[in-house]
Length: 289
Image (tube, rainbow, N blue to C red; front, side, top):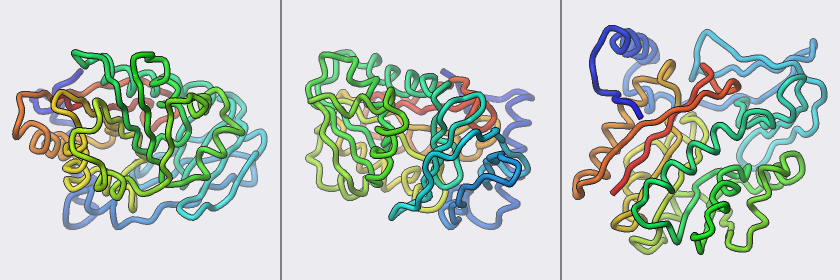
């Protein structure tokens, strides 16, 4: 866990860099700016290299040598690419951003899932996943035999279809009889859920660019809070401290306001290293009631 509200020269340097990137983008917070952005389409250059370019990490890119393009189509919602890489096995890319690879996906799945589930005083009985169409989070949830109901709300039906074909070791979670899939917008799904339904909610979202930025803002977390049981826990993907300190600060303050205003709970921050994510690291925010 980490404290993102403290001082110190290293912390100040990170905040200063994040503030510079935010101010370069114009008015409003960085999340507000990203919500107006358009996602990029993925592609492989003539030399057989894939480059991950995004305004989420301006001035830098992660590149991978491509052995073979396995799948590339446009769904109703996004550009979906799968390629076989030289060193990381199969790679899933949505709107130009790497989501997972065969080699290192476990690092992310084994952080965002066990942390909230093991934080509960009593084992969860009913769990919801928002996003997570590759099935990795589902796989980890199904390891917990005390859970009776596992629901997943994924907007794009093409993602699970592709995962089952090209990432079967991740998508195995879809085969569990406790799993029920809802292919619809997460906002609309949560708005129809009875208050206090879930013991744990895991938000496995993409980066906050374009429509996905709404999953990092207050109206969404108000609905998540409403759907959570009185002793429940929420965990969400929370970007990189090296690249997105301004986003993290905004998200941390927002979640404290939503989740701690009427309870004695906690908002905690954790991270793991994963080489194919920007800066080689990704963090999660967990809110325990």
